[in-house]
Image (cartoon, rainbow, N blue to C red; front, side):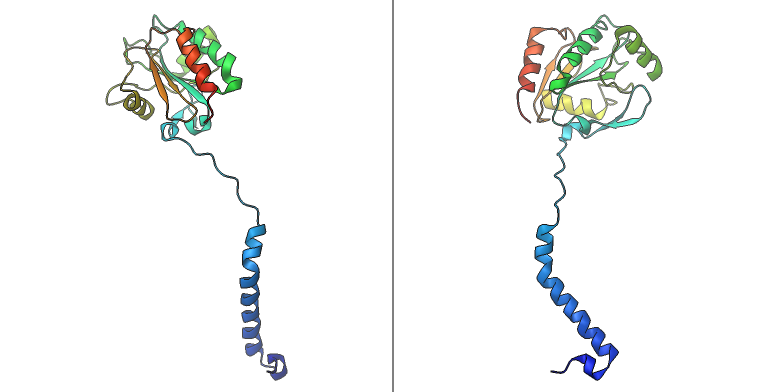
Length: 205
């Protein structure tokens, strides 16, 4: 068969060339795809952490998915409570275990005894100036009832327990599924809580 070039018909030649390109691409396509770099797998974020909250200090939105794979201690806090001194123990836990994957998350709430009446800036200043709090804290919200923030609603569903007062604690495992609940009266330095934290830290996600 004569080449289209012999006939000098540019339209025929264009069609012939396009057909060749398609045929070559069909042959090389799978090989080229096999050699192409594959995108890195994205770590999955457990449903329990698929929430966004404003940071206490500047009210910038933060995704809790950034804590996926870590052990998370969630605490509802208040500035004028008999348990407010627990800030010190919570910060000590965070400082001691953060290199191993523990994060403490504070959620100021005015649900109990109206013991957190201030605005976000006042709460942030109090926590930093009085207790030197460095662990992440979020804007004031509710943790019980119809107005409870979505994380606390899920924690209550998972454990069957809701906070009865300020400084209730939930400990979430690396898998984002295992959750333990502790009453406000349990001090952060309590051996049973420390033991659970160490056990959760030693478990792979």
